[in-house]
Length: 250
Image (cartoon, rainbow, N blue to C red; front, side):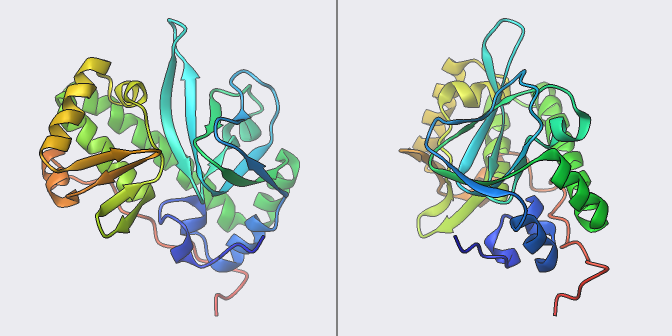
Protein backbone atom coordinates (compact mmCIF):
# COMPACT_ATOMS: atom_id res chain seq x y z
CA UNK A 1 0.00 0.00 0.00
CA UNK A 2 1.38 3.41 -1.00
CA UNK A 3 0.61 6.03 1.65
CA UNK A 4 0.83 9.77 0.90
CA UNK A 5 3.15 11.60 3.28
CA UNK A 6 2.49 15.24 2.39
CA UNK A 7 0.97 17.37 5.15
CA UNK A 8 -2.07 18.04 2.97
CA UNK A 9 -2.93 14.32 3.07
CA UNK A 10 -3.80 14.35 6.78
CA UNK A 11 -6.10 16.43 9.01
CA UNK A 12 -4.07 19.39 10.26
CA UNK A 13 -4.59 18.58 13.95
CA UNK A 14 -3.86 14.87 13.69
CA UNK A 15 -0.51 13.43 14.73
CA UNK A 16 0.58 12.92 11.12
CA UNK A 17 -0.71 16.37 10.20
CA UNK A 18 1.65 18.19 12.59
CA UNK A 19 4.79 16.18 11.81
CA UNK A 20 7.42 16.89 9.19
CA UNK A 21 7.61 14.50 6.20
CA UNK A 22 10.67 12.62 7.56
CA UNK A 23 8.94 12.04 10.90
CA UNK A 24 5.79 10.88 9.11
CA UNK A 25 7.86 8.41 7.11
CA UNK A 26 9.24 6.99 10.35
CA UNK A 27 5.76 6.48 11.80
CA UNK A 28 4.28 5.06 8.61
CA UNK A 29 7.20 2.62 8.35
CA UNK A 30 6.67 1.36 11.89
CA UNK A 31 4.72 -1.84 12.61
CA UNK A 32 2.49 -3.70 10.17
CA UNK A 33 -0.63 -2.85 8.21
CA UNK A 34 -4.00 -4.21 9.35
CA UNK A 35 -7.51 -3.75 7.95
CA UNK A 36 -10.89 -3.78 9.65
CA UNK A 37 -14.47 -4.01 8.40
CA UNK A 38 -17.30 -1.83 9.69
CA UNK A 39 -18.11 -2.63 13.32
CA UNK A 40 -14.84 -4.44 13.97
CA UNK A 41 -13.31 -3.89 17.43
CA UNK A 42 -9.76 -2.51 17.38
CA UNK A 43 -9.40 -2.19 21.16
CA UNK A 44 -11.65 -3.38 23.98
CA UNK A 45 -12.24 -1.59 27.28
CA UNK A 46 -10.59 -3.39 30.21
CA UNK A 47 -8.11 -5.40 28.14
CA UNK A 48 -4.47 -5.39 29.23
CA UNK A 49 -2.80 -5.37 25.80
CA UNK A 50 -0.59 -2.39 25.00
CA UNK A 51 -0.32 -2.09 21.24
CA UNK A 52 -1.17 1.15 19.43
CA UNK A 53 -2.98 1.77 16.15
CA UNK A 54 -2.23 4.60 13.74
CA UNK A 55 -5.32 5.12 11.58
CA UNK A 56 -4.28 5.49 7.95
CA UNK A 57 -7.75 5.61 6.38
CA UNK A 58 -11.31 5.50 7.68
CA UNK A 59 -12.93 6.50 10.97
CA UNK A 60 -13.20 4.91 14.41
CA UNK A 61 -15.43 5.57 17.42
CA UNK A 62 -14.10 5.65 20.97
CA UNK A 63 -16.71 4.45 23.48
CA UNK A 64 -16.70 3.67 27.21
CA UNK A 65 -19.12 2.15 29.71
CA UNK A 66 -20.65 4.59 32.20
CA UNK A 67 -21.82 3.84 35.75
CA UNK A 68 -25.34 2.75 34.75
CA UNK A 69 -23.93 0.16 32.34
CA UNK A 70 -24.71 2.05 29.15
CA UNK A 71 -22.07 3.01 26.60
CA UNK A 72 -21.09 6.59 25.90
CA UNK A 73 -19.39 7.92 22.77
CA UNK A 74 -16.26 9.79 23.87
CA UNK A 75 -14.63 10.77 20.60
CA UNK A 76 -14.11 10.09 16.91
CA UNK A 77 -10.71 9.29 15.43
CA UNK A 78 -9.74 9.50 11.76
CA UNK A 79 -6.78 9.18 9.39
CA UNK A 80 -3.61 10.49 10.98
CA UNK A 81 -4.81 9.79 14.54
CA UNK A 82 -3.57 7.20 17.00
CA UNK A 83 -5.71 5.07 19.30
CA UNK A 84 -4.47 3.08 22.27
CA UNK A 85 -1.50 5.26 23.14
CA UNK A 86 -2.62 5.85 26.74
CA UNK A 87 -2.41 2.17 27.71
CA UNK A 88 0.89 1.81 25.90
CA UNK A 89 2.38 4.79 27.74
CA UNK A 90 0.93 4.05 31.21
CA UNK A 91 0.66 0.25 31.26
CA UNK A 92 -2.91 0.56 32.59
CA UNK A 93 -5.88 -1.43 31.16
CA UNK A 94 -7.76 -0.04 28.19
CA UNK A 95 -10.07 2.80 29.24
CA UNK A 96 -12.36 2.59 26.19
CA UNK A 97 -13.49 0.41 23.30
CA UNK A 98 -12.57 1.49 19.77
CA UNK A 99 -14.61 0.26 16.79
CA UNK A 100 -14.39 0.91 13.06
CA UNK A 101 -17.15 3.13 11.63
CA UNK A 102 -16.53 1.69 8.17
CA UNK A 103 -13.66 0.02 6.31
CA UNK A 104 -10.51 1.09 8.15
CA UNK A 105 -6.78 0.65 7.54
CA UNK A 106 -4.21 1.15 10.29
CA UNK A 107 -0.63 0.49 11.27
CA UNK A 108 -0.32 -1.55 14.46
CA UNK A 109 2.66 -0.82 16.70
CA UNK A 110 3.82 -2.82 19.69
CA UNK A 111 4.49 -0.64 22.72
CA UNK A 112 8.19 -1.53 22.76
CA UNK A 113 8.89 -0.46 19.19
CA UNK A 114 6.91 2.76 19.70
CA UNK A 115 8.90 3.58 22.84
CA UNK A 116 12.17 3.01 21.03
CA UNK A 117 11.09 5.32 18.21
CA UNK A 118 10.02 8.03 20.66
CA UNK A 119 13.39 7.83 22.41
CA UNK A 120 15.20 8.08 19.10
CA UNK A 121 13.02 10.86 17.67
CA UNK A 122 12.09 13.40 20.39
CA UNK A 123 10.18 15.49 17.83
CA UNK A 124 7.65 12.66 17.49
CA UNK A 125 7.44 12.27 21.26
CA UNK A 126 6.70 15.99 21.63
CA UNK A 127 4.03 15.85 18.92
CA UNK A 128 2.36 12.84 20.55
CA UNK A 129 2.37 14.59 23.94
CA UNK A 130 0.84 17.69 22.34
CA UNK A 131 -1.89 15.59 20.74
CA UNK A 132 -2.79 13.99 24.09
CA UNK A 133 -2.94 17.48 25.65
CA UNK A 134 -5.24 18.65 22.83
CA UNK A 135 -7.57 15.73 23.53
CA UNK A 136 -7.72 16.63 27.22
CA UNK A 137 -8.46 20.25 26.32
CA UNK A 138 -11.23 19.08 23.98
CA UNK A 139 -12.79 16.96 26.75
CA UNK A 140 -12.65 19.91 29.16
CA UNK A 141 -14.44 22.12 26.61
CA UNK A 142 -17.21 19.55 26.34
CA UNK A 143 -17.72 19.70 30.12
CA UNK A 144 -17.85 23.50 30.09
CA UNK A 145 -20.30 23.46 27.19
CA UNK A 146 -22.69 21.29 29.24
CA UNK A 147 -23.08 24.11 31.76
CA UNK A 148 -22.86 27.16 29.55
CA UNK A 149 -24.99 26.44 26.46
CA UNK A 150 -28.38 24.96 25.51
CA UNK A 151 -28.46 21.66 23.63
CA UNK A 152 -28.78 23.21 20.17
CA UNK A 153 -25.67 25.33 20.66
CA UNK A 154 -23.76 22.40 22.18
CA UNK A 155 -24.53 20.23 19.16
CA UNK A 156 -23.56 23.03 16.78
CA UNK A 157 -20.23 23.44 18.58
CA UNK A 158 -19.56 19.71 18.35
CA UNK A 159 -20.38 19.60 14.63
CA UNK A 160 -18.16 22.60 13.89
CA UNK A 161 -15.23 20.96 15.68
CA UNK A 162 -15.77 17.64 13.89
CA UNK A 163 -15.83 19.54 10.59
CA UNK A 164 -12.59 21.34 11.43
CA UNK A 165 -10.81 18.15 12.48
CA UNK A 166 -12.23 15.62 10.05
CA UNK A 167 -14.33 17.41 7.44
CA UNK A 168 -13.67 17.48 3.71
CA UNK A 169 -14.95 20.29 1.50
CA UNK A 170 -17.31 19.26 -1.27
CA UNK A 171 -19.60 21.14 -3.63
CA UNK A 172 -22.55 20.75 -1.28
CA UNK A 173 -20.70 21.78 1.89
CA UNK A 174 -18.37 20.16 4.40
CA UNK A 175 -18.74 16.38 4.73
CA UNK A 176 -17.99 14.61 8.02
CA UNK A 177 -17.30 11.09 6.82
CA UNK A 178 -18.29 9.32 10.05
CA UNK A 179 -22.03 8.92 10.53
CA UNK A 180 -22.90 9.40 14.22
CA UNK A 181 -26.20 8.05 15.52
CA UNK A 182 -28.61 10.19 17.50
CA UNK A 183 -27.87 8.35 20.78
CA UNK A 184 -24.13 8.89 20.19
CA UNK A 185 -24.62 12.60 19.52
CA UNK A 186 -26.78 12.81 22.64
CA UNK A 187 -24.04 11.35 24.84
CA UNK A 188 -21.39 13.65 23.36
CA UNK A 189 -23.37 16.82 24.06
CA UNK A 190 -25.05 15.69 27.30
CA UNK A 191 -28.66 15.87 26.09
CA UNK A 192 -31.65 13.55 25.89
CA UNK A 193 -32.05 11.66 22.62
CA UNK A 194 -35.48 13.24 22.07
CA UNK A 195 -33.88 16.67 22.38
CA UNK A 196 -31.24 15.79 19.80
CA UNK A 197 -33.93 14.53 17.43
CA UNK A 198 -35.65 17.92 17.61
CA UNK A 199 -32.39 19.85 17.24
CA UNK A 200 -31.42 17.82 14.15
CA UNK A 201 -34.84 18.48 12.62
CA UNK A 202 -34.37 22.19 13.27
CA UNK A 203 -30.87 22.22 11.73
CA UNK A 204 -32.08 20.35 8.66
CA UNK A 205 -35.09 22.66 8.36
CA UNK A 206 -32.82 25.70 8.55
CA UNK A 207 -30.67 24.33 5.72
CA UNK A 208 -27.60 23.94 7.93
CA UNK A 209 -27.30 20.17 7.97
CA UNK A 210 -27.95 17.10 5.85
CA UNK A 211 -27.62 13.57 7.18
CA UNK A 212 -27.12 10.52 5.01
CA UNK A 213 -25.77 7.00 5.06
CA UNK A 214 -22.53 7.03 7.09
CA UNK A 215 -22.02 10.77 6.57
CA UNK A 216 -23.16 14.18 7.75
CA UNK A 217 -22.92 17.27 5.53
CA UNK A 218 -22.78 20.79 6.94
CA UNK A 219 -24.42 22.94 4.30
CA UNK A 220 -23.60 26.37 5.76
CA UNK A 221 -20.54 26.25 8.03
CA UNK A 222 -20.32 30.04 8.71
CA UNK A 223 -23.94 30.13 9.84
CA UNK A 224 -23.43 27.04 12.00
CA UNK A 225 -20.38 28.74 13.57
CA UNK A 226 -22.52 31.76 14.45
CA UNK A 227 -25.13 29.50 16.01
CA UNK A 228 -22.33 27.76 17.94
CA UNK A 229 -21.18 31.12 19.35
CA UNK A 230 -17.74 30.58 17.84
CA UNK A 231 -17.37 33.95 16.14
CA UNK A 232 -15.01 35.39 18.75
CA UNK A 233 -13.95 32.45 20.93
CA UNK A 234 -12.48 29.62 18.95
CA UNK A 235 -10.53 26.51 19.79
CA UNK A 236 -6.79 26.89 19.23
CA UNK A 237 -5.80 26.46 15.60
CA UNK A 238 -3.68 23.59 14.37
CA UNK A 239 -0.13 23.51 15.62
CA UNK A 240 2.46 24.17 12.92
CA UNK A 241 4.34 21.14 11.59
CA UNK A 242 6.93 20.02 14.10
CA UNK A 243 10.48 20.92 13.11
CA UNK A 244 12.82 18.00 12.63
CA UNK A 245 16.20 18.74 14.19
CA UNK A 246 17.91 15.77 12.56
CA UNK A 247 16.63 15.70 9.00
CA UNK A 248 15.95 18.48 6.53
CA UNK A 249 12.56 18.61 4.80
CA UNK A 250 14.14 19.81 1.59
